[in-house]
Amino acid sequence: MTENRKAEHLRICLTEDVQAKKITTGFEDIHLLHRTIPRFSLNDVDTSISFFGKKLKAPIIIEAMTGGTPEAERINANLAEAAEYFGLAMGVGSQRAALETPRLERTFKVAREKGPRIFLTANLGLPQVIAENGIEAAKKAVEMIDADALAIHLNILQEAIQHEGETNFYGALERLMIVASELSVPIIVKETGAGMISEDAGLLDETGVKGIDVGGAGGTSWAAVESYREGLKHQLGITFWDWGIPTAVSVVEAASSTDLTVIASGGVRTGLDIAKAISLGADAAGLAWPLLKPAVEGHLDYVLRVLIEEFKTSMFLTGARDVEGLKRRPVVVTGKTAEWLALRGFRPEELARRGKEDDG
Image 1 (cartoon, rainbow, N blue to C red):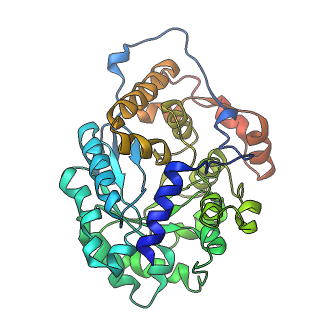
Image 2: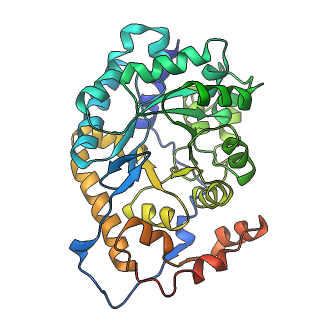
């Protein structure tokens, strides 16, 4: 039953170590360049962006986490209240459970009630969209929470490992194209911890979707989550614990191949990580796991306040007055990330030389 599975996922993420072990996000290889002589005040730094036509006070998305269980209602309420207060975007967890069991709709609807002005994203998995009633389900998910966009999440790794997983993806691109044309809100295609390469980003661009959330490797491993569901006896989950494309690489891959809105997620932990992601080509960055316990324990406001200050300070230290200025700042890519990008045909040295005469 979907409701029970969602409760298990929530419990495991709150109580077990489900983070990547050997693979990293690659952000440790990304180096923003310090500007020694400031030309403006820290108070002049503008962290706001326009996100699908709606203003955010910072390019931060509270990523999809939960829904469909009694505890999820309180968590989503806390997340939405924080998003409203700080002027951030938010996504709810997969709404499949509520489509199957209408009494669970409340656990998702609370997000809009507590965040009446936030950019709120509905959420369904690709298998549900591919299904015969997929377009109807997509429209209902959006209507359920008066969403500003619909995230269609790609979790083929998790589906392949999960004993009740759905692994039939025939006609996926064609269905995405139909849904994108039928819905009145933009579609964001979202990976969930395995990352993305430019070839797939290019294919998605052709479907009419408006955004890509790269969901790179280096943060929460859903293969690990499924291993814990099996009492760590599920060998598939252990084998593929660190599977995927690192987040930093995924951002460059996606941003270089499309003009779509690119969201960096997967192991984003600090405001400096957000600044690094945007310098690589992302338009915004999202976090989930680092906000889950604070949302449960009641100190979410403090965590978000620090995150925003870290991001603002990163901008100031690089000489960027606004987020568009940050995108033009030079950034040095070293180590495995530089090697990976070079082998894939990208030129990290061009990132290091850009914007020499641009003072933000």
